[in-house]
Structure formats: C-alpha cells, structure tokens
Length: 210
Image 1: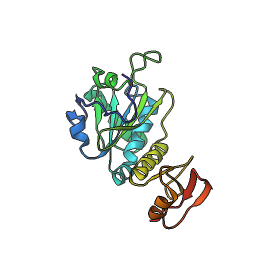
Image 2: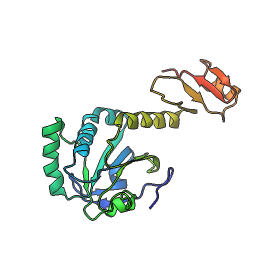
Image 3: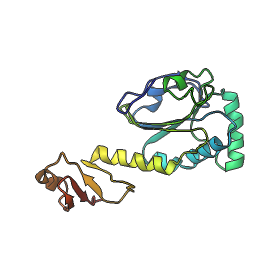
Image 4: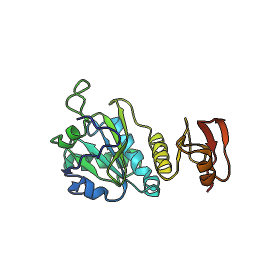
C-alpha cells in the first residue's frame, strides 16, 4: 500500500507495550509520529528508541505522541526495553506496537520486499490532529534517523499551518520565512506590518514577530 501526503492515516487496532491501541482513538486531537524498526535487539534501533525517549519534552512541547513499531511480540519488546535503558540511559516512555502478524506494517507499506521481506524498513510518518499524513520518510535498515531533522520539519509544518508562509532551505525556528505567493502585497502588509525583504516578487522574506 502506497500512502501519500494528505491521505488519512489508516486506522488499526494492535497490541502494544502499553495495552491495546486503537490508533485514531489513541491519537485523539494530538499530532503523532509513527515510526518502525526492522526488528528487536538490533543496534541502530536501540539508539533510536532511546533518543525518542530522551526527546519527550520536545514532543510534549509540540503536542506530539510518539508510537513505535517492530515485528516482534510484547514479551520481546519488554526484554529489549531493559537493554535500551541499560545501554543508553533512557527508559522508554511511549508505546511500541507488537506487530508480530505484520498487519500494521503491511497496512502502512513498511515492508519492502526487495530489501528484506521479513522486516520493516525505518519508516516515519508525521500525522496531524485531523489524522492526515503530513510527512513521510523511509530509511534503509542500516541508517539511523536524524530526529533533530524530524523535529525541525514538524516545527515547519506547525508554523505554516498557522501562518501564510513557507520555510526556506535549512530553516531553523526563529529564522526568516517566505511569504506565500498567494498573498498580494496589500494582503501581506495586513499580516506582516513589520515589513519584509523582497528578493523577487515571488520571494519575499519576512522575520516573524513573537
């Protein structure tokens, strides 16, 4: 199944380390980051899961619920959690789906047969409160994810949902943004009385006010 941006994230019910999860109900009115791991007791995944746990204040600040997935059962997840805490110094503080029947992995297209038909790739989906998929990333099993970049992309999504702007290359929060070309100069003056720098009529850079 090929999931596209703007599509409603498929709902599901599956066991997890925190009980049965009915995905849409569990997500509620929050944003979500849903990400998969090839299998338990693998080195890269161990570092990634600890990083997601460490970033809890950042997820909370943005109203985001993390949800992991691996094609192993709850018992194996619980054993792995002990390894993660002991080796990385961070206990897991979010649920991990026990997708041993691969129901959810197949629903979300997380198994790429040409890579390995038995495990999931490192898929990432960012889902907004309306349950729409807003961002998707796919990493090979060997490459660990950059969660700083995922946070940066979420910051851009949340900002541009609330302002008629987009964010330029390598943007970081607090840096200038681009005024939407759909706004005329007159409309832009009403939204951005602080003014802007016009590089081209279609490229107007503005520093947002706090």
